[in-house]
Amino acid sequence: MSEAEYSLCRNCCLTLGRLKAGSLFACPEHCRRKVRECLTAFRGRGIRFAELGVSCGRRLLLVYDREMVGELLADGDTVRFLTDRGYDCSGTAAAVAELRSRVSGGGDFPHEIGVFLGYALDDVKAFIADPRGGKRVGGYWKVYSDLPAKQKLFEKYRRYSDTICGKLVSGHSLLTLFQ
Image (cartoon, rainbow, N blue to C red):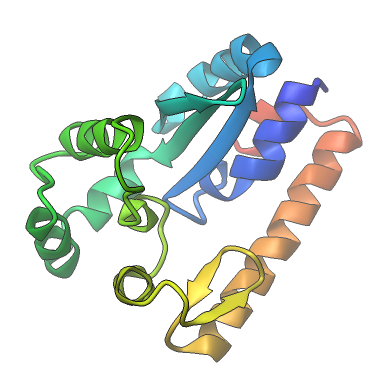
C-alpha cells in the first residue's frame, strides 16, 4: 500500500463504496500520478474525478460517482437550486465543468459544492444562507436540520471508513475492497 492509496482511501472511501456521491481530496503533488492511476482503475465502476484547482502544492480533486451525482441532478429541488445559481444541469459532465470553473476561477468559494458531495440539500441551502449557524457533527458537514438522523448517518460513515482503511492497512488492495 502506498501513501497515495491510503490517502485516497481515507478521503474517498465513502464515494468509492457508494455511500456518498462525492468526496474532495487535496492530493499532494508527489502522489498525483499514483492517485490518477488508482482513480482510472475505478472508471469502469462509474467513478470519475475532476481537478478543481491547485493550492500549496496540492491538487484539489472532486472524486464522484457519476450515477449518484446523476441521480442528484435528476431531483427537481436540486435542479432548481443549481439552475438558480447558474448551473447547466442537463448532464453530470456539464454541471461538474461549471463547478470546476467556479472553484478554479478564484472568486467566492461555491458552497453549492455540497450538492456534488452528497450533503443534504437543506443543509447546503442553510449553510449558504447562514454559514455561522448549524452544528458541526462528525466532521462531514454542518447540520441545520434533523440532527439525530445525521448523527446516525455520520456514525455509519465513520465505522465504514475505519473498517475499509483497516482492511487496506492489513494488506487488501484498494481495488478489491470496492468490488
